Image (tube, rainbow, N blue to C red; front, top):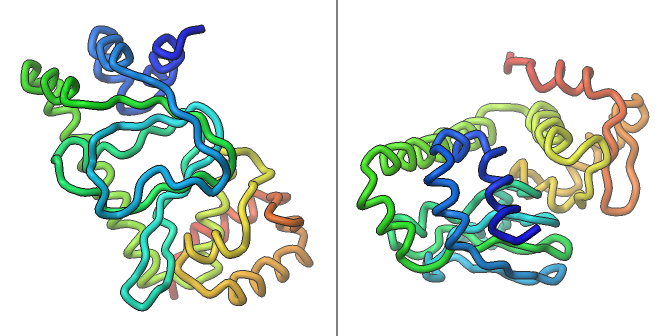
Length: 226
């Protein structure tokens, strides 16, 4: 199957792009090329030009940023079918975060101004793209609210459930990456995970967390702060 046909399938399965219609999806897919990354290879860094839109074909990408005091914050973990990089690509400003391959990765890439020219010709499509950006902003606002207001165990439960929905019960992630993802120290995340392991919620191995009792994690993640 050609890269463009595979990208068409991915875009049709994506909750947002599926609503664009077959003609727009075919046009976007026709602009794509492919790119491979090795484990730990940087795709782009904060401040780099936003000149491409990406979709993950295989592997896992970490989207993160660094704080002024040197701490790393994981904003998202992306896997097959996920589309990213659209904000800087559409507004022409530099990247606001970095993207790093956590394992060997294959990407679909849409480069250049062709997509922007398509949006200039199609007002309805442009409005839908604005909707995508609003979804991203709402998602980031919710993550900031969690980091500020919710206890660590609830934040961690929500992130593991989200990751397990994307990647299955066996999640390839280090405790350091989880700590950055929930905005906590690795030692604090380790203590929570060890308690959960003893309680049968998860199993732990090198760079891997396996969810054993997803219903209990869902219930924990649904708890409101008291």
